[in-house]
Image 1 (tube, rainbow, N blue to C red):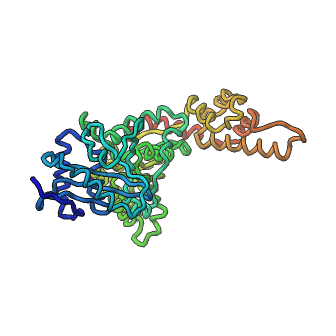
Image 2: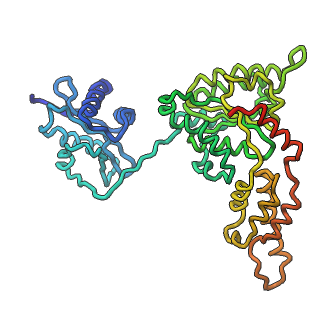
Image 3: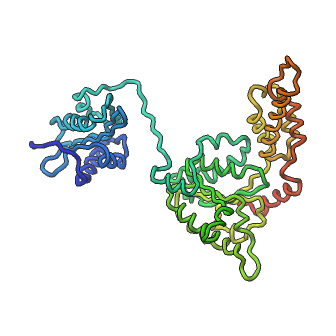
Length: 428
């Protein structure tokens, strides 16, 4: 077999690249770059092929970024190895990238690849004591524009870890929601159908919105919050705007959709003739089944008034779980205080007393009291302290004063109703 030559890649060579890829896999070599990345670089970066007649017998693909170049793919059919084709392919693709002014050309090879002569012949040096780290970006570039139009965003990756306390709720959400969604293949193996829609309910200020965002952060999925009050101003009307919004959401590969105070658009229907709000509720009831048919998405609805929701809205088949998010217990309150108190004074603060005094406080109440104490201490240090004073940061007394002046969000009657709702409505 003689007469091979090297030329630039043509779109008609895609089948040849696919064949080379398959041959590599069959020989036990798992390429570092995904096939989609290789094919994309063939079209938009730098690629050359070795051909015999019309047959592709080898290929090299390179990518340049500033002064750094990377060999994305290099392969030769087994029958053509040992003829210097790999070395020539590397030389050719390097010459195509030369106008970029490269000062370094690198290649990543799987450990199972033993045929490295082409690289050595071209002067590549094996770097010792290096590790290759890789992280998949969960949102693809083509999704960023529709995500932006929806007002969605990618949340920081540490929100889940930053939820202070509330371990019972976190564990429940981790097991029921995050696990089957993050490990979809494993869930399928066990016959678990990943959840598509859930309701979080509980008194105001207990962290339902925080948990919804933390779930998106934990999954590394885009977060889109739907605001019915904003949609109401749409010329299509609230029902039409809601339908259009969910059609746009369907274009995203993965997403956590959040509707807060969902009782505004899903309250008990009554009266004749149907009111405009009933039409919105009906539209939402139609949207949810269609939303559930698409994998890689989760609808999270939150409400402070679970009893006000339409009975058809909560039924099985629409929502997988109806999860209570209540007031923090002592352990959770301790974690919250430890988070909000400045580290510089934490050891001097009687946290046990603060935990005891804030029984019945919501997370929002505790955060407000902590911020208030810090503000009071700052003002005291600047305006009230005698010259030469040494106080730095809030003291226990500042926190106790702030706690005493904080009006709790959740009254005893609301807390009791919540406990009753857990018994009669929650679905875990």
